[in-house]
Image (tube, rainbow, N blue to C red; front, top):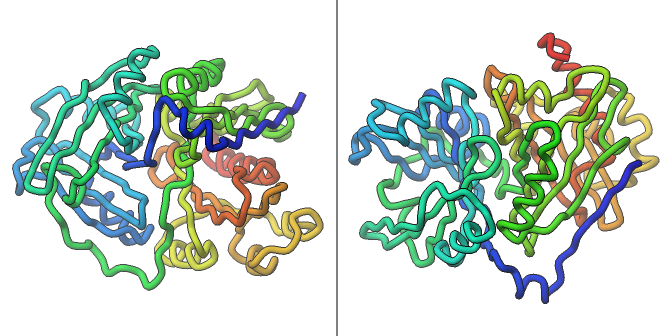
Length: 382
């Protein structure tokens, strides 16, 4: 049976939130070569290098580059010369999983209170709360574990005026900034977990972080002729932080979740959705910079207007750029997905432009997953 549910928090729920958050602080990647990754995301994604930590300013073990676009912040870290448990973790993570996300850092008003609440509710501690300081102020950090080797660093940076965190220095952009901002915020971050584990991790976010269930996709919602998966979306009380969680479902062939779990060697972050105010310009700019997007057959657009209605972008432009549309009771959204951005078929990105809708493109699931299946078949992994 297909069931879809949605949760919209009211003011009372927000006030009673046991785990208040301000939003996503950063998505942190462990990579083989942070300098080259920073260049790629600067040139291809239009992001701006704003901060750096490395041997030149006292970090002898790792190099980290901080890139931003609006409120969206990515951090790329690689090992220069491993000498500590942290360095060993980065090296081993890259060796086992390839380039991938190790931290979905969340900004909170009180890191100590958030950590204590989470641990009291059963979260596994990685780092107890501690302070880091420099001439720009003080930041309080703590970390808890989530699925796979992913963590949530809890960041309290009230009043801090530095470029990122103590230990980082301001850095100049790597390439000239594009004329148009490609995106300006992180919309949601999607995690893939093993068969039978989705509800366990939904419960984790419900209990440990006070998140509520926003949407649920099961059965025919999220299946094609050959593969299937199940997905639930958890979010904080203000919907600033949204985490869809996917698990594979039994089907005729290997699903995209199965392929990810196989090549990532376990659960992890599958894709990051980025908000754009002008998806047409974003896709044009990113395509021109070499980013590859999933292809959508022309037949998708032949009847698009009949069910999606009119949008601000003409159907012929959507067809040209292969942008998808979905509409619900609150409005519509435009979205498109990149192909994996590294050699392993693991991490990819979504560009999304919202016009009222707070959905995730349910009407596009079949077209999207068929597009992914075509790519899986090319790789011999379907």
